[in-house]
Image 1 (tube, rainbow, N blue to C red):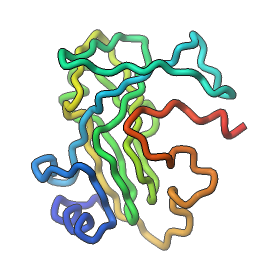
Image 2: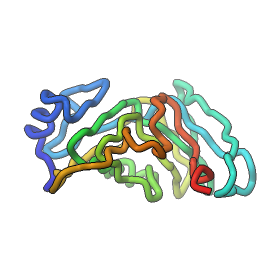
Image 3: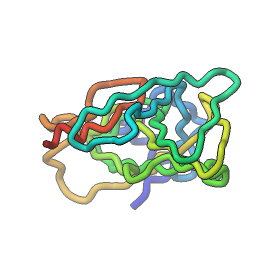
Image 4: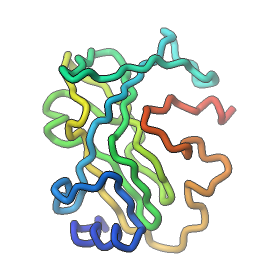
Length: 177
């Protein structure tokens, strides 16, 4: 079951959902709009190695925007820091972003109960497109959980994305090996 706008507000008041900064005008019927942060990153090596800590280069989106290029994987980040203590958050691209030919995640649209951080975005595009820091980029949808939770993400000793950040985080797959 997806939470309604009123239910999201109730869960924020109860502290089971945290969104910082929170802007009531970003709350939709059953979702919350999130915005592109000012930092992007790209991998610097021509081949990304799943068993390696791959270096990235940081890009700061200037006021006049930044043109994304097809064939490049950009790591972006949401302006919003979120915490979800009793629901499963899903991040989906806004339809307006999709209509610009931008995908904001390749496979990582689902968060875990206990995820507490900004969201790293895996951004790609089908043609050159200019993006701006602060533009609406996605929407968080919250699903109710059925049953008790025993392994909150932020309490797992092997959770790789717990360190609070305002910048995109490169893949930590190498830690699995």
